[in-house]
Length: 368
Ligand SMILES: *Cc1c(COP(=O)(O)O)cnc(C)c1O
Image 1 (tube, rainbow, N blue to C red):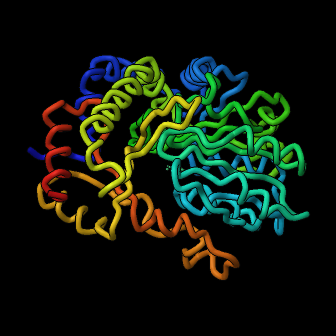
Image 2 (cartoon, rainbow, N blue to C red; image 1 turned 120 degrees about the horizontal axis):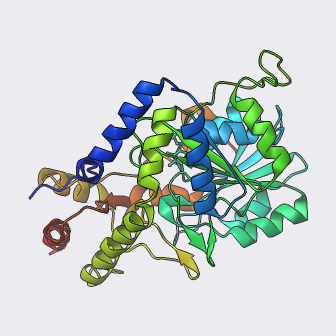
C-alpha cells in the first residue's frame, strides 16, 4: 500500500461545499485583497491564540521579515537563529543586511539550545529567533530569561507549530512577535502561500499593519518603507473555515504519533530514536521525525521510497553549512549530526490505520 508523506485531498474534500460557497461569495463581492474576510480571520485566529492582535500576511517568510522590520533590525545587527531549521528563519535576517548568528540545537527535541544562545550573545545582538520545530515548542522560558538579561527581542518562528502549547500557553505569545505560515504542508494548510504575525503589543501591531502595505498611512503617504505583505481575502476566508477544524487535526496527528510511539518502541534506542514530547509541551506533530542510527538513514529512505512510502529529510544541510551564508565561524555539531540522521515519516491527520501499519511494518522489515 502506497503511503504519501502528505495528502491534503481528503481533508479539503470534506470541506469542499463550504469552500465553494465562500469562493462564490467572494467572486460576487469582488473584494480580493484584505477587507472584511481578512479581518474576520484575524479576529478568529487571535482568539484561538489567546493573543490581542493578529495580522494576515503573504507568507511565513514575509511574517518573519515583517517582524524583523517592525523591531528595527538594521544592517550589522546580529540576530541569533538555530542552525537546524528551514532556510527562511535565517534568510530574512540577511535580507535586512543584518547578520544571522547560528546556534546549535538540542539533540533530543531538535530545538534551539538555550546554553548555546548565551554563548553567542555579543553587544551587537538585537534579537533571538526561536523556532518551534516540527510542531513542538522550544524552551521559551530559557530564551525569555536571556532576552531580558541582555535586552533582546524574542521572535517566535511558529511556522510548523500553530496550536502548540507550552505549559498551557500557545506558541506565538511568548515573545514580542509570533510568525506563522499557512503553506499547504503546515498544520493549517492553505491554498497557496500565506502567513500571519501575532503580538500583544499595540504599537508593534500598528507598525506591522502599516508596513504590510508599503508603509502607507494614510493612503499614498508613506511613513516607512514597507512592502507588499498582504494576504488575499480568498485565502483568509478559506483558512477561517479550516481553523474551526484545527484542534481535530492536531488531535489526529497526536493519535498517529502515539501509534508510532507504541508500535516502534522495539526499535527505539537500538536502530532508531523516536521523537519525544518535552515535559509541559503540547506537541502538534507537524512532522514525526525519527533519528536513524548507525549511518543507515539514506538507505532507509531509499528502502521506504522503493515501497512508495513517503519520507523526507528535514534538513539535509544545517544553515551554518549553506553556501549563501559563507563564511561562518564556529560549527553547530548537533545540527550536523541531525542532518545525517533525521527522517520524517507520514503523520498527516487522515492517515488510515492500515497505512500507519504499512509504515511500521516497512521499518521492521528494514531492520530485521
Ligand atoms: C515553512 C517555514 C517557514 C516559511 O514559511 P512560508 O510560508 O513557506 O514562507 C519559515 N520557518 C519555518 C520553520 C518553516 O517551516
